Every structure is written in C-alpha cells, then in structure tokens.
Image (cartoon, rainbow, N blue to C red):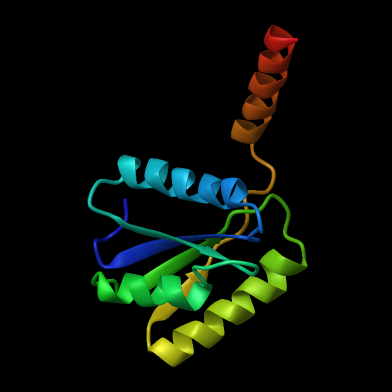
Length: 126
C-alpha cells in the first residue's frame, strides 16, 4: 500500500482533555495494524504535544523520506484547508522532508455506515 519510506501523520485539533487526545493514538494503532511495519505518528494542531513539527521529526528519525499528513477532521474547514497545510509546509521546510497533506475524512459511504452503527448502539443502550 505505502512504500516503507513513506510515513503517515494523523493530525487532530488537540484538546486539554487527555482522553480526547488519546483517541487519536488509538486510531494510529489501528492504521498501523492494517499496514504492518508502517510509520504512523500523531500530532495535535494546538493545545498539546506532539506538534506537527515533532511528528515530522519522529518520522524522519524512523527513516521516512516522505510524509502524508492526514487531517483527522470531518470537514475541509479552515484548520484542514489552511492552518494544517501551512504548519506542515513550515515544519517540512525546516526539517528538509517532503510532506503532502491529504483531504480530511469528508463525505464517504463508510462514514454513513458508522453513523448508522452508532445510532443502533444508542438504541441498544437506551
């Protein structure tokens, strides 16, 4: 799927709540499990570490020469469309590593299935 020299960085907004930040680490674990041996790191846009620059540095230290940064957000709002790409560009230039930013999660049939599953779970619990 991905060459071993390409890393993935998942970026969310970041939170003061540790439980919210820990969710992104669990997503990264699931991505890593689907691509054994892959380089997958997390970053938070603000409020807590690791920063985007720190995540790119870890990717480079682990042998990545290219990084795909995925905004773990639903919509292509200001953070996903402007802030994260700018922060990635600045960090990549500083570190001398190639980085691209993917589209956020957006609209996808798989997300619709997840919404339906969560609603069914709520009914079962209710």
